[in-house]
Image 1 (tube, one colour):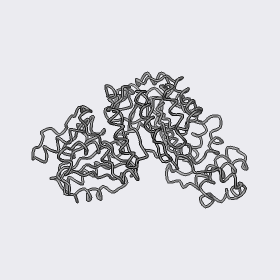
Image 2 (cartoon, one colour):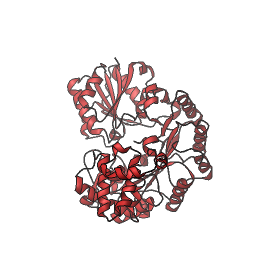
Image 3 (tube, rainbow, N blue to C red):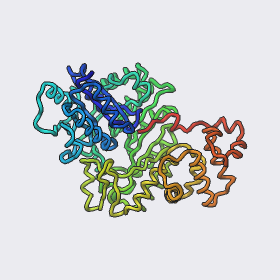
Image 4 (cartoon, one colour):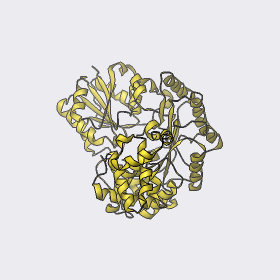
Length: 504
């Protein structure tokens, strides 16, 4: 039994909440009476409520994000109906801004707006002592980082064995990109690097090998970045995997040299491009040297083994379809391993909301608050682009079609894939649950209609399907599979993304 529970609904089991582990580590005397319980958004809220209440808690803290807000609201409603005496405290980005009037906040007893690292411990102590603060919303300022207990010892052996570990060498961001909540930060606050690396050493000694850095701009402080890379280069083995978010236009030589030393499968860089349109960049307060970004992406592709995951956003204020098309094709020409096509979200508190009326931004009122239309992209077109993003993840980003994808994209990557996306939706009326053999068949049918040579097409699809084994390939590919030599089969291996890279 635990008097204090900390819980959240993660998108997937493999995710582990860094924020809640900070709260757990900083509970002080209450740590012995507290427990962390993590669930996923595909679990039934009533079953989650049952497991939480079985611990007979007096206080439950729930971490809320745009991707779990609906499910959390259902959970809170159940908890208050079943055990109204249990105090529900909310925290996280979804309730840190614009909390007043939120139905979710109205359901709960308290909401901590801002950094809860220390604030939750203070509130929990009051509540367990029988004191009830008068205000529902508790505003928490950033704590002094030197006073924080770092959370990494709260990762269990099971976490280390089965989950991706989130770590941060710094918190916050000095840039003001208006679509991001980090635009509200005044700067980036680094943790003491010796202390941080000591924690990484302890995790590594316990067997941790997958580290996802959540620093918004890992390559901002290059000296610190180089020390962190040196730390892991000294501990390289076949299991090590690192993920960093980097700004694309800042890649000094010292950083480049270190990046070249990581072997295949050990390093993933998430490169936030978002848009190549200078007018849109100025509108959303994003400072980016596009020429330097292109040069750095090209260099990373040609001189390192890093898996490059580049981001673009659909629906930014001031960007029309032609501009996004040009940006996508420009990025595709640089050949990142993945292009994450995101739909603009109206994160609560993010400054992009100031463009709502001036640029006709219309957002879904329900989480995750995706943009539905702008003054440049109407609703039907936005729906087409949303399907484009989904299908691109299935085909372009999956790593399953390295031979067939160039045939599909031709000399107009965006235009040809949008045509495929429209065709695929008209044929299936589905954007998910398309079985892989069926997807191979659909690609074959579409490219035949485009006029591609059937022999060339079947050989390309067979090569892409061979890594899954003949049993997973549709019958139309079996003759072409049979023609592949044993040597050709040995060269084929599972796509790197499936074999090594874990994503949010």
